[in-house]
Length: 182
Figure (cartoon, rainbow, N blue to C red):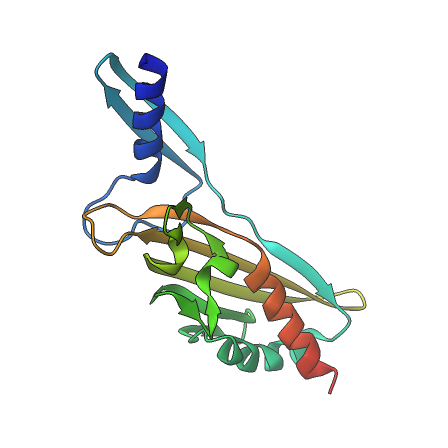
């Protein structure tokens, strides 16, 4: 019974994070979660999920850079950060609900699942999508980071980290390739 109680507390605590006003910074390098139960407490350090998708394309960095704003637009990502010198484009922490560019959020990110289905499709989600382009031998290297935090709409709960499924990063590359192959 104690193991089941501790597991329940752990499951609930794993969904909570520190902070009070608004979403926490997306994907910290690590996070400490304090768990307090009837038989004592414990701290758990969870590693961050800041992973990048890196791909090499057989097009120049300038060609890829020029194609990225259209790719972001076609996927429903409003560009708020644009640095032509660093060839960096994206949006850091925009609000999105249910769908991004006509695609269910659960296709792109995993925020857990309840009896009603994937949380990403019903939660208040803050999404970060950032892409950098660098010249490389024979073309360019494209690095995309997709990070998200989410919380239930109807409950007073803190934002929890979600994980990328890698699908949005690949869609960006696919759209850029298609635009440059014309």
